[in-house]
Image (cartoon, rainbow, N blue to C red; front, side, top):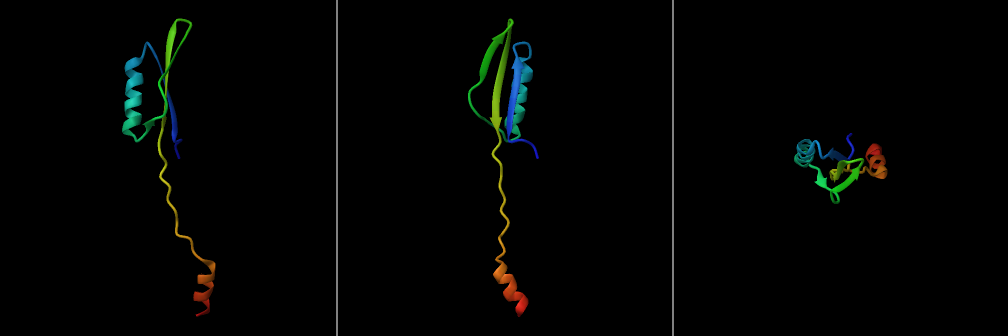
Length: 74
């Protein structure tokens, strides 16, 4: 199972790759979660984008044990 959370990191030297990674994640069903974060460190600019994918939950029908016992007695 993959994580429903994703953080994509990019730098000012790979903006096209950063944008493509975000586009690919959006096409895979992720949604933007929060604002783009931009920070500088040592002359380089870093960008971070968080994404989340809504999980689909499936529920199995609960079997009532009393009903099973009744059927076994018949």
